[in-house]
Length: 241
Ligand code: 13P
Image 1: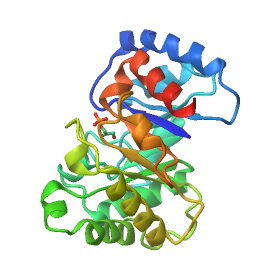
Image 2 (image 1 turned 45 degrees about the vertical axis):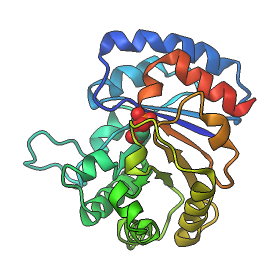
Image 3 (image 1 turned 180 degrees about the vertical axis):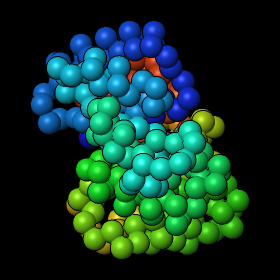
């Protein structure tokens, strides 16, 4: 099972001290039972990867620029730069970035750049509340998958995170039967049964019992609850026990 912490725009150097608990906890978990990944703001990738060097915990970035080459892109960071400071993963297509202008074409270019740089991609997809109400969920998911993964033949470095936009930060999660259907639909559209599928959106230690039994879910992408080490550990414990 994957447990990926997406810290979003939270955290500074002092926040890293709070990870000591998680590091200690991770040492007692059997190898290969879980994959723990932290995606902090890019300012923390280097210090965090140094700190986690002797642990099984890996580090990822939350976004990247689409250009594989360096260039005159003020404020941007490309995939090779992220890799050079210790990132092994990168989140691409998060709805918070889609809202800021990331469209399927840009997302596709970012994914290509990331795989070329040797990063694993956490590719986020999900419908808005309006799309859900209009029964467009499958249509939206199919298009995001088709366009986002266009011409990407080797999908071995892709992990898909299904994050319904209405569920992010709202405390709401999909009904189990809806989630089972969406996960199965995503799997059918990926056409590759080996691609891991994660769920994200308001995951916490109270609802994870319901979520972990959903067929086809290989782990969780966790926002708010991942910033608190105790809450994050509780989610992991409840999932694997
Ligand atoms: P929350 O867990 O805070 O709802 O965030 C989910 C998310 O966006 C993870 O990428």
